[in-house]
Image (tube, rainbow, N blue to C red):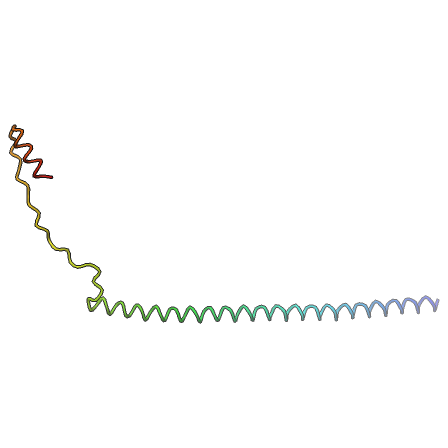
Length: 112
């Protein structure tokens, strides 16, 4: 019976050692995974910061251009079109309703 008890104790010790080894491996795996995730997040964070910095610079440039355009508009420098000048278009004579072909021809010719 003592032999069986020794074998059971031996199996129990092996199981406990195996469990401890598995726990240590699991712990190492988790820390490696967390470290890898941290590195990836840090890289993405750096990339986002660079993008935000670039966008801020572009916004500042656009604000500067906007100030210049506003000043130019205030000073009247950006007149895209000159004011349209009134054209002197002759007014047609009123058709008097005459039944003469020459009167109708003259009226139509003047309209063209």
